[in-house]
Picture 1: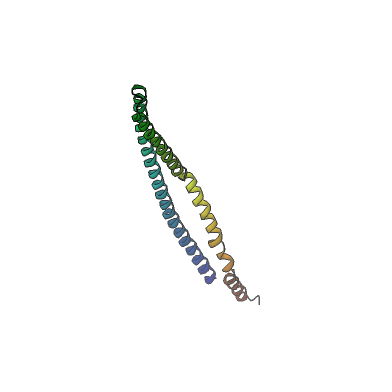
Picture 2: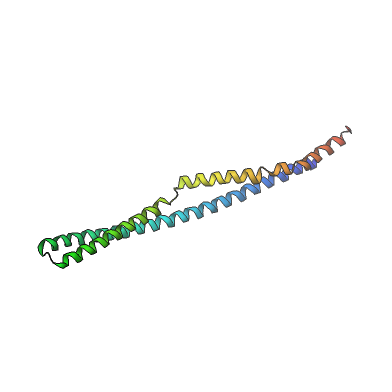
Length: 152
């Protein structure tokens, strides 16, 4: 009987230790995921800010080019339009890059759900598989208990 109680006590300790290990690992993994999402958000915001700045000055340059074109009709106008086109192109590329970065960010709710699914999968594979492997010592303990009652 004492072996049976000791076996259950040891199993309870093992489950408790496994749960503590799992929770520590989950907290660390969530911390890393949040840090990665924060870096992606920061990079996306910086690219969006650069695109907005270039866009702002490009509009100013476009206005200046329009004024020059109307006032002088000189080759300066062609140069201003070329620079304006380059500014528009650069803005478009930066906006696309910023959008890609911002779309790659995993929301906190989606991140926690994903980590929860991974945790359940790990629990089913690693922890729930152990009792089946440990079933033979429990059966031997139960057999020894019956033998002591004179049933043999």
